[in-house]
Length: 407
Image 1 (cartoon, rainbow, N blue to C red):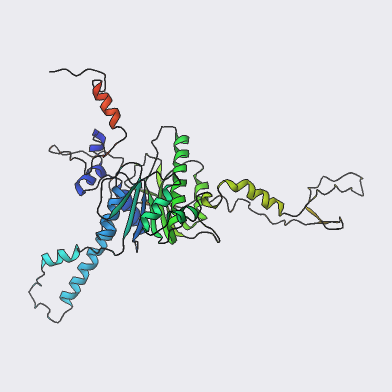
Image 2 (image 1 turned 90 degrees about the vertical axis):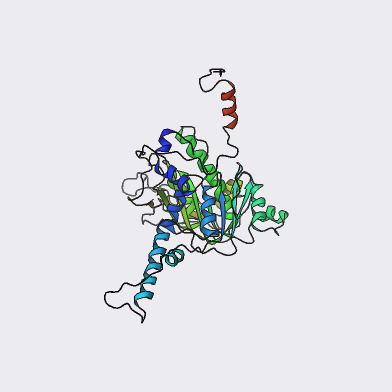
């Protein structure tokens, strides 16, 4: 999180530092959870492209510590308060007329904020950049686009997993409930190039998710919306029952980013995760097409029919024919019913806007009070990629090349 004048007036930027989050992106995951209930009955999670760790911090506080935020926290407080009122006024010792029931506010507040940590929690965070430690989070510094990362992830999820088995059969013995990815490449401003690189990053994240997700699991990842993004939705629909495109309120409307939310992992029959054949196909697509073509019946074009009345040759469309062992062609009559050949290829996912109008507008700049003091980031970058550039700029006298003087 930078300290530009616009960032200082960004509501979510300031709220993140006030509430102790490492980055404003934590609100994106919280708003996605409010809409899709991502953390329900979840104990094993993999966080991809996790640096600086804001999403892992949300997982640590919600799953490990048992805290609640947003709408779920409000619903819990309302339910506990109603139950408290029923216990007070529904008992036999009801207050007399003119008397007010006494309620221990301290006990009530403690019961409303009681955390419910979950058992057998395992959370693994992966990123190329180093991540500052978080309680209960296993961090791996690795490249999710490299095949060697899969055995490392499987070993982190199950310490007894054998590395050789992970190479041959990259399937987690103890599978996870949720895989999330907030990764994005360094944008260049060329939207087509940025969307392509982001799609490759998403492909790597999905390949990892297919190796560790259990049936019924969930997958959440950042995408860049483009003109051909519906093909991506159709490919994800092969593995998941429901696919949504969500735009959290904390995500700036001027940004092309969105989040793909995939619910209920259902791999196709006979599918097995493989590092050599990502998504079950890999480089064998030409062989698969050739093998499928060889299984089709032998056909020959139909000779044009001569019209007995005019003697002219009809230019009717050719119909498929099959030759038997005696060389006799049998005409196969085509089904005249209209068939949508693209009905299983293209599919547009429903768009969901997360966060109601009562939330802050991420594109708006709110006026700050006169006595406003900018807080320092909760967790400064440990090894930012621009650190070397800042050192060189400082050595050359600053942004404008002026040498530093002794005054």
